[in-house]
Image (cartoon, rainbow, N blue to C red; front, top):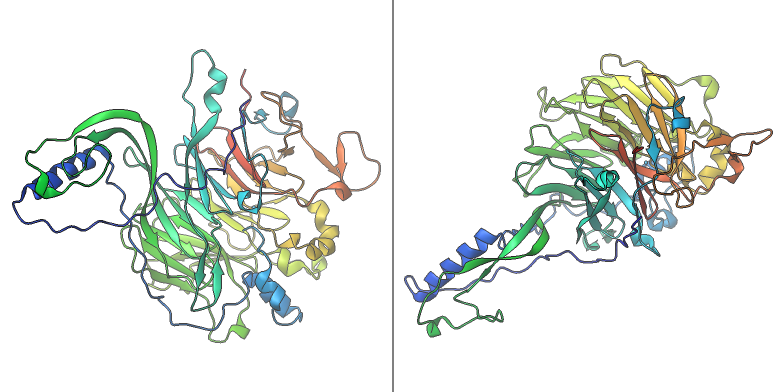
Length: 544
């Protein structure tokens, strides 16, 4: 088992540079030499870095200091009569915005990760904040609070060691975002990566979108195994030569070199969000994507960076009239005109962009009526939806709130067709969870490739799986202590009260600082990746 140290490569392989401008007379030897050199660079891929600078001015006029980072927290406190946001709300860090003996639980045998990917000693910047497989499952990307993106590539199958097929090794590491400061609003913008979304592969290169609180970037990840040599305007040491000293011309040649993986920022989409971006989603037309903050959803074209279209805006004229915020949004996997967004009130709205340019009026509204018998002081906050996902076939919607996962049929709006209790044993501990802010944690949920099993995270580094066909579930734990190569994970069980068995854990012993918020599932195989603090665990089917 290899344990590579990650998150220590703090810089990307290529950083943004300045474009050198030079005036050369038409027909001069310098111009011809320059043309030959540029052609060699293009053939090798060395000049592929194109940085589109963001606009200098905001799209919106300067306004007073922004509300607290967690608008939903401030909104809930205000509705409960807890007063206006105080200074601590401005500085508080936000909550992160998600077997043979197993045969009676799930039809899958999972073994501990072939590689546990983590840093040896981590800081706040090393905490993984998002994880995502690409459309083929060959690449896996993670983003962290330090603004870095680490991409892992799956090993090719070996005849001598077939069990190594599922292992993922570091492919590329680059700095996606840097900390910034908005001087107009006196607001610090963190470098933390909130979401990563892959674009389907169109050629030899890979493309992904990454976003922090304000800016979305389109990154190109490509390989280069040749380098040009024999420049006319540069000597062997790379120093620029005086064009007047050039007496003869030579054609640069491409020489083989060690494989180099380059990450290049191709587009920068900025200055379109007043509030913090919580989700992005790529459209099935492969030309557009949406970025969502607490009050707005913006539609972008992947080729245009200087403007976007606001398609949802729920901001009231008077912020005191604000009753809910947007928590997540996603495009339909097949219908490019349909998208859904969830709210802090526990509702989901399905919108059709063909009906109007501004989708303030939804075409379908999904909400489950609240049972008055179960209403409590914390009902509103635990009903807030932290994640929404379409199934791969586009028929169902899955939502995750604090205690449950719900599956909705797009043809039935009044109630979910399936409801799964993730950690109902915490219902009696909501008061203490509110005191330590854990009640604001945002758990993600994910489908498997066939939409038959769903997965989501919990506390104590537990993650839960629910089989939709058999209605069985299992609780597994991602931890170094339980992770031995090719050993079968044992199901865990939480004891609420009474006599505790040997293999059970008491609800009072759960570690709420250890939580699995971010999970992803391979699109075709039973390979899953879960992020636990600074550790990335990759589990796969049991290999015979």
